[in-house]
Amino acid sequence: MIPYRTDLQQAIVDLLRQRGNRLLGVKEIYDRLDFPDASRDEVERAIDALQREGIIIAVRGKRYSLLEFTPYHAGRIRVHPDGYGTVAGGDKELDVYIDRRSMKGAMNGDLVVVRVDKKRPAYRKLHNRDVIVGEVTQVLRRAHRNVVGRFHADPEQPFVAPFDVRLDHDILIDADATLDAKDGEMVNVEIDRYPDRSSNFARGRVVERLGFIGDPGVDIEVVIRKLHIPHNFPDDVLRAADEIPV
Figure 1 (cartoon, helix red, strand yellow):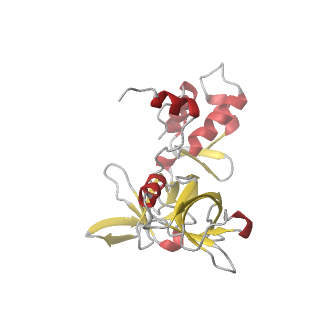
Figure 2: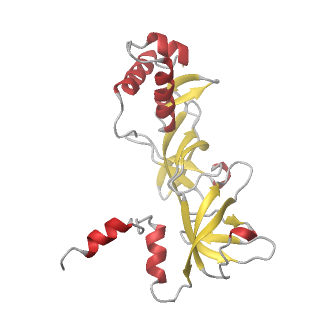
Figure 3: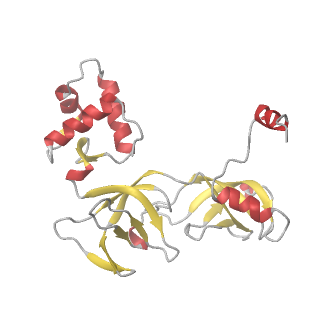
């Protein structure tokens, strides 16, 4: 998942692959690495980077293994409008099915770690194909910093319902963070706190008011933000664009 691994990261992966299902702590990795120029801090940073990308995982505290030797699997979660999610299983492996209760706050597109019982796996049928049942144990990287949706001016708790039906977590908005949005208005929200095991709601603040569906141009603005298409550019870029002959 890391588009480019440093030599140090690759050396750590190679070492853990050689050790198979035997766990290694940071000191053991550092001592066993054939990488004399690397400091302990550099090794720890490389381990953290590999862990954030779902290449390795910490098991039993700070002891590490490649995911392929564990009951865990990492991948992007795809959430169905009905609420369940799937994570691609890779070559020759079944996709992993996660029911709504086992999502642990993961949102569509997030990079997650899922656990499956490889010794006693549970299977189910999904659209006439077999999938293996699992659960999310960790969200490694969020796919959405901003979410576009419809603002609801509930007097007890304002919230935004995401426009994308695959994002089924409403986003709670504090009364002083609404940007004076009107009920039913389409807005762009910056997420401050994501849903987790303890709450099915996200929290955020309105950063843009886009207008109401049906108003000229609003549908285009909504789609641009839903797809995270860049739409704000520095002044020098805009000036350069204006100078291009048409």
